[in-house]
Image (cartoon, rainbow, N blue to C red):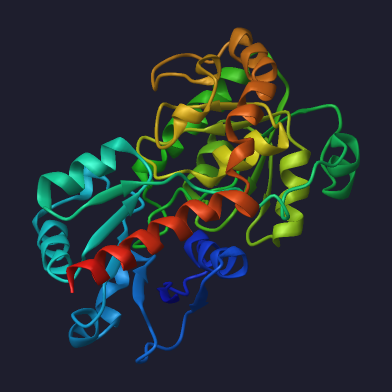
Length: 317
């Protein structure tokens, strides 16, 4: 099967997902050409669907991945864009029941849930002390990590509330009452959290656009990773922390069902020493829950889904 996989080329996780799928899929995957041999179009970046001419979308089966939708931002404009795109989509892929339910409330097209995969070739365990030394982090501090953007691109100061940067800062401040903390930030658009950490006199280090190799070292340097999102598709950090056995505390967002219940917290809960113990005690369960999502095997679930679509389309001809 020949699949045209449309990625946004924005330097975001979706671009990496497309590249990883191309490497591990049994099918012929490309990002540049739709021709007479193309069997299927996969809109991996749903928001840039209109970069493909409508007549092309109408000519082939179209699968659209909806990573997630933020309810507070799903206004009439976004709804209308969804409905316009839906005219050219034949099947949907998503990760959570919440997003599946939203799609089904707006569309009659089939919706399939397939979880993220984990690139087990990319993430490797390294000794914590070696990782901290490489990054010039203090070895006598409690290192808390956050590697996802938290600030709106429109003004580079407003919090991206679905990612919960305000919650993250509050939870860091909770822990700072009984731990000498140092925050390790990665990724772009971290202006909001940086400003709030300064206001609260919380020490931090920031690597804006680290390589994947450096991000791997960053994970391994942590005593704790905090996911503070109100709304998520993944996040990828959930799977990466679980695979690397990094202690993790997460809100009940995105694909949190892969996590041990003891390492989850509600938005308003104060993170005390009990939560730190829970984070440390649940790493093995988290690893067991996601180990079968290795992209060496789990991409087969995507391959099978696309094969089913093609067979279905042929049977309807």
